Length: 469
Image 1 (cartoon, helix red, strand yellow):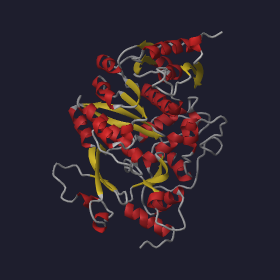
Image 2 (cartoon, helix red, strand yellow):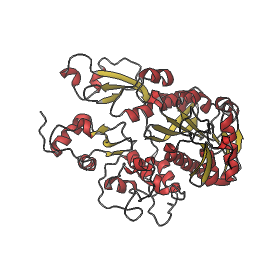
Image 3 (cartoon, one colour):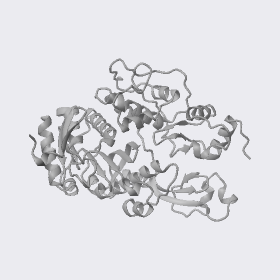
Image 4 (cartoon, helix red, strand yellow):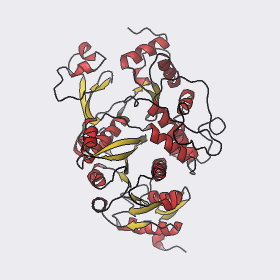
């Protein structure tokens, strides 16, 4: 018979890791042993990134030392030890007493040998060196950035996950206070929020004479996960800081453009926009947003490696569609292929009973045929491509420029008329016109393209046979 104190406990299972958590586990204010199943997919991406890091052998230590800095239930660190194995030395930390005891119990429950600490994460990061650091911050990630970059070595990886952060959901005052930039509600606000977080990370790295390269940026529901790798030296730090720029945004049509890299003032900032709204409408129609990260938010090479490694994990079916979408988005191809290499008998998304809310979100992404083939086109990787369960290997497309920043929501920008074109159709039309185009995981009703807004509207009007006045 359970004791009175045990009545509020329950067991959950995440990819063969069993956890004892509170019934009120979804609310960190009510339970120190916090477990958020809505970010299960985020955790699987971070674990896959860890596997790629182990494979590349970039660690300055014999065994790759990794830290789950805000453990809560300990699920992330236990997943690493369970599925990556003896190749990693896992440390799970939490500053809260009940969470610390919960992590110890869960580690014993799964028979996994991990180091468990009850320390302030900032103090721990200042004292110890880890090659792979993951911080599930829940709210304010800015509090940990300086400490995280302090001892992160060259080639080290930092993964930041934040959920329900008001600063990243268009709260201007909080964004300015925590991340040093101004943002507003826009149709591309999810990517804007991710770039605001990346700008704060780049500044924190530069204070320690380090630069960073973004490997992966994901926004799922209210959560953001960014994975970056560190480059050391003053030159790399300066290059990263130059990628932090302000953005001019038109409040009428939502056209946008980054300011150029210059120390001289721009005489007419609205001239950077191609919409002409400042000439047609009275008053000020433009906002100055940021500064935010202006560089690439994906590494196609790393995403391809993650896709190959994900095939050996139990979450391969659920992560496959998102990773395929991210690769297609990072590539944002000119190509318009017709043949399709299919996965899992012709579908990216297998049929699952007992779907979670997270799985349903991934299912909504619906990678189009052109993107599916684009993911698998191009030259083979230098290393022999890995195949698993007779699935075709994703390959790396060489000599591609970074994906264009931001995306356009078709409901917002399509000309008024009786016909709204499907996203797949718009992508095909843009590619036929010689532009790069792809879906974006940030918004299922949007396209990422290097075409300007005015060009996009013209192409949409012609494709829908609508005369725009």
